Image (cartoon, rainbow, N blue to C red; front, side, top):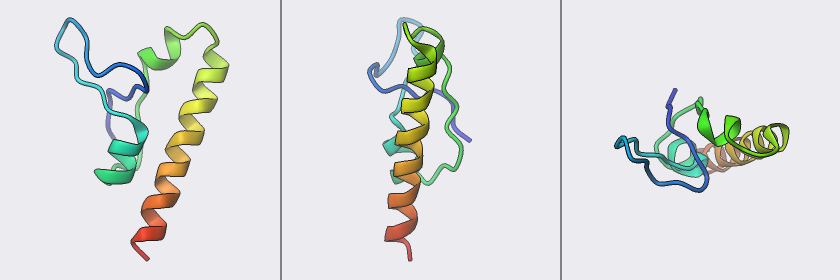
Length: 68
């Protein structure tokens, strides 16, 4: 599991570092992406959650295809 997943931001004023679903799932091998601000600060939370789900699943599929 990895927190700090966002599509746009690379960090914030408090020093939080963010990664994309492709980075943490596809390249780092994490199985669960924890998304907070990327969803709850979005103007359309449902759409944002769907986008994170789709991108995370696509990264997982790419990772598992390349390891077989």
